[in-house]
Length: 184
Image (cartoon, rainbow, N blue to C red):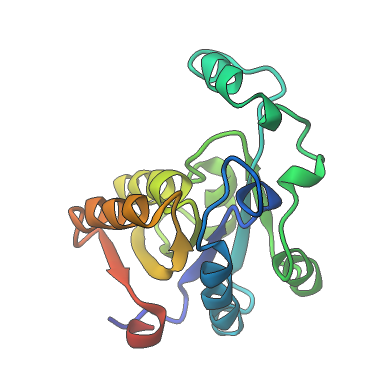
């Protein structure tokens, strides 16, 4: 598959909260990060980073969610929600936009303001089985062309990662799953 030159790289939630000893850690975070690093030069001027943050006042289903995950109910400027390196530096040095949302899916008016209404998105990041999946489905539903780079994503587990990729493959041709080395 050839990704067009005007496609946008969307780096989903490469944040501290998904590393190390965090209850939300993605075991293959570092592996996904290396693949994303290799993609960044290709998308200079067409990269957007996203951040997941807790809402200031959870409502609806988010109330019991944060009851289960109280460690994450901190302000968005808390270090747990910071982009990890080298992504924080890349965003700052390159002037790449950062979209911050209190939702799993990042497709919405803030991301659309950056990439346009019907872009070609190249999705990477974490967690494949949560924020990447939610972003991919909503964007495809809205008419965006979505390419998910499997080896530039990491799930809560390898099994969850694989299941999420399988689910997204069901949406072809709206969503295409590729490998960064073989297909980009």
